[in-house]
Length: 180
Image (tube, rainbow, N blue to C red; front, side, top):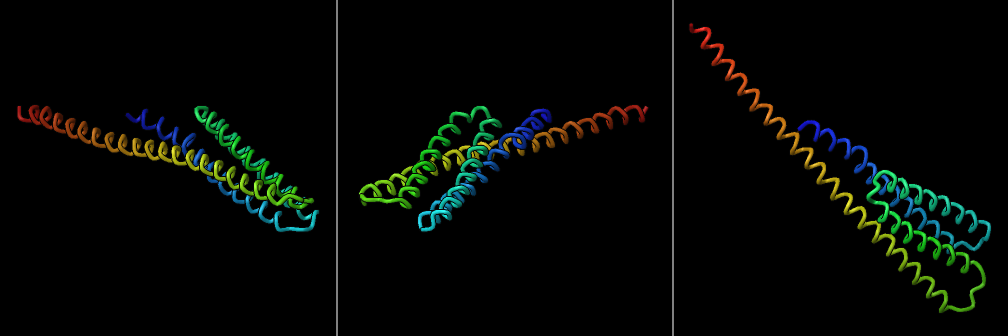
């Protein structure tokens, strides 16, 4: 039982928890990307916009690295992570394009409206997919943790029963010898 519990604890510490940790980092970086794009949209100075977009690119690269690391930690999540990456790249590329176009010359207000709607749509798809991933991984983490706790509790109970039985047996055998 302790071998099973040990492997479950290793799985939690080596796979399940690091994935949730990486997810948390991706969420923080996602907020930084969104904030960068928001700042760039209201900024008029071209050099400042370029600096802001440079920061957004760094955040984007870090998001991709964190997601790729998740795929490396848990090979079974590679397809899910690839899907999340595709949604992120679509959101990121559309947002960057919107910022660059908005700071350039825009003649058609309908194109601008469509671009904003697409950014919102792509952002929602990315966040929803990322959230679904987190929910499924957190559920797996909880199940693994519960299993470890139950297995540990059962191991203690089993050990107490075996220990009590051994003491009882020794008392009977020892007591029988003593009474002779």
